[in-house]
Image: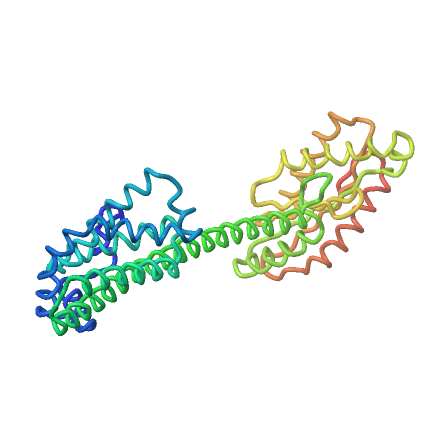
Length: 357
């Protein structure tokens, strides 16, 4: 899409020669009106300086306009522009160049903050001054009437162009504001979505060990069991806890107990596959779900975890229960946990770290 800075105001507002002609017809302006205005150009040209001075005397009497003009340099520039504007009114040429200049006048007025009521007041003042000059200089009453009518219609034509520019500028500002609002809303939506996802993820993680909690385990188990049932693949569960964990907390303090739990979670991470799902089931109890693995494979994983844990905490031991299911029929997660829990307590009855399958 072409940048606005590479387009004329005519192009931006899609005003073609046909559109200009249509607007002139809507203002009831014809070639006869153009000739009438052109005929008085010498008269206007001879008095244009005094017309401009009278115009700005009336405008500077309005506080709001005086504040907008602000200084002598700006006033002199405006007088030069007004001088040309008045002469163009009586040029007899109301083509695309004339229209583009009128559009630019509207754009400038909008940018410097001239309210529509002030622009309309200024046009009214200019018209009265021009009418007075015509009244004082023209002797043919009918030609005077027709010339004033032509000028009135042309000033109306100019005003429609100026206000179209005002409206176009306001629409552009609204579209820009809307775009910014939509971008902000989209950005906010992404942030909310990301934050919601983060919170949901945190809600499924055990805050101490960083592995899945029981809620996440159950959600993942449902998906895993459904997939394994379809594929007729085996599924194993390792269920274990720390022997005499309460005694560890009582003797060494809860910080030591927390450190032991973190060590276990790290040992688990070191010895499971990416597809395996480690969970802190509660307290000092841990579960590992192993899809596509039988009890023998699960036992090998448990042995490696025990060995790694023993290197760090040789005085502590783990009791492990293992159960598998499938590949044909699969038990429910609760049934598997129930069996593994019993086997874990069987292991606990023995001395040291033990595994019961």
